[in-house]
Length: 208
Image (cartoon, helix red, strand yellow):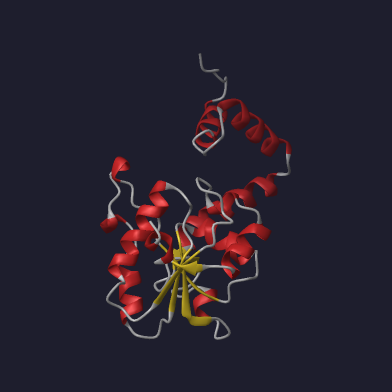
């Protein structure tokens, strides 16, 4: 049975907080009461930051990473090697790989993985735009840095097939990333070594 509050404002705030992933109503109540105990300006700043985030954050037109501009800082950085594209599932994976300081190329954020069970097909994620980037002719290597799950492997193979006609080296993370693990939960040392010791994707099935 859900707890009822005397204040409709409190109820509304708790209801909104509890919509966040991993936040139940009890935790939501603690967060709301915490904000009420702070100076009013703290709550105002919190609210304004959320509104600005939602209104001003956009996605890079090149790699689909989050950005405040049409092109994200990584794609716009002339020091990055634009001939090497690291393909990841989501923005959190970009952050994880950046923390290793082992990748000096650019990224391509798919925005998901192929998962027929969930009704997600190749057309639902950013694969066509990846193929377009490679066909432009400046890309020499595509690193498939997707999670070692069934969905990740399915997406890897689909991308490999789509890029088969392109003159590009296709590699994948060394299997220091355990099967079943997601990139965001892999420690930085293991992830960094997996990037440095990446292997040709074709080798992953040529021995079968």
